[in-house]
Length: 337
Ligand SMILES: [Zn+2]
Image (tube, rainbow, N blue to C red; front, side, top):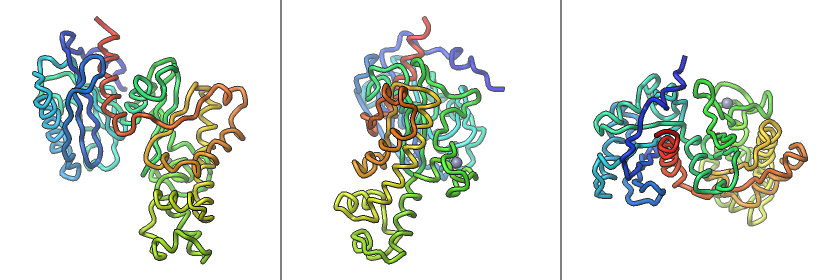
C-alpha cells in the first residue's frame, strides 16, 4: 500500500531562498531556478536519453539541475527543494510505476536517484498534475479553487484540483481523464481499452479521421497539400486547411471537438468545477476545434454546473511544467514550519 504521508515526511530546506522546477519529457528535460516568489532566474535544458534506461535518465536530470544552479549562481544550500513533473504513474515517494516513452523504468525510485548526487529534497508528480498546479498558481486558474485540466497531444492527460488540493488518486492513478470511455466499442486505445477519450481525440485519431475522408476521393485542399500522402498529414495542417474552409478538415475537427466536449461535460457533471483548462498543441487549433467542443459541452453538461464553469485555454504553455514544479515545493514550504 502506498504511504500517503511520505510527502509530508520529506522536509524542504526551510532556510532556502530558491526553488527548482523540473519538467522531464520523453525527449528533453528542462530545469528552471526560481526565487521564492516564483520569479524565474535561470534555466537549463538537456536531452533525457530515455532509450538508454533509467540510470541515464536520472543522471541527465541531475546534471541539468546542477547546470541550472550554476547558471543562476545559486549554491545547493540555498535551494529549498526541487519539484519535478514527468509523464506516467508516480507514487508519492517518487517511484515510477509506469511511464510512456521511458523503457524499463517500472518500479524505479527515480526521485531518489535524481536527488542523491545533488543532496537536495526532491518531489515528483505526474506531469499533467504538475502543469495543473502551475496553471492554478500562475496561469488561467489564479482566481478559482477547483479545476480540471486536459492536455491534448499525442496522448490526452488530465489533472484535477479540488478545494485547492491536487487529487492524485489513492495509489497515484487519479485524473486519468484520457482513459475514461466516451465511446464504448470505439477506436482502440494504447491502454488496451476501446473508445477512451484519448483513443477518440489524440493526435493519431485526428490524422486517421482526416486520412479516411481523403481516401474516399472527396476533393480536399488537405489532399492537395500533402499530395495524397497520408503520412504527411499533421493536426496543424488539418487546422490550417479547416481555417481555409476545407470541408474534410472542418468535419475532422468537428468530430474531434465533439468527443472532447463529451469528455469535458462528463467532468463538469461529476466534479462541478469552476474551470476546465485545455492545453497541449492540439488545443491551439482555434475555433474549428473550440466551437464544436463548446457546443457539445453545452449539450451534455448539466445546465447549472455549466453556467458556473469556464472552459478556457491554458496560459502558461511550455512553462506550466517548471512553474508547477515550483508550486509543488512552495506548497510544501507553506504547509509546515
Ligand atoms: Zn485508454
